[in-house]
Image (cartoon, rainbow, N blue to C red; front, side, top):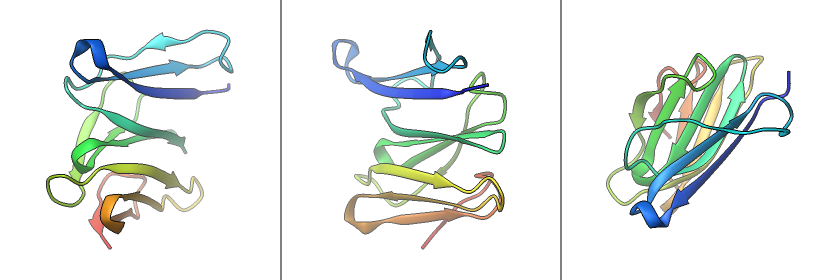
Length: 116
């Protein structure tokens, strides 16, 4: 199974984030409902867990292929955007990075996060 994610911003809808998911290597895509107003910058799927990061330092997590999402952490203070996230499926470790050099890490597949 080839899972893929795409994120973007719907300017016409007032900057509401868009999240698309493919489970067939990109042959078709489906729109995923997501927290209203959340603008995402990166999504990564690793070890059965999907983690998304975005504006205002929010980190979201899904354990069911993006059907349901939980806001698990806000990294940094207001005005911090997270632009990248990496996860290691073997160890469950991961890092999210963003503006002003902010870094947050997880040691448990994204269930909890802490600043670095």
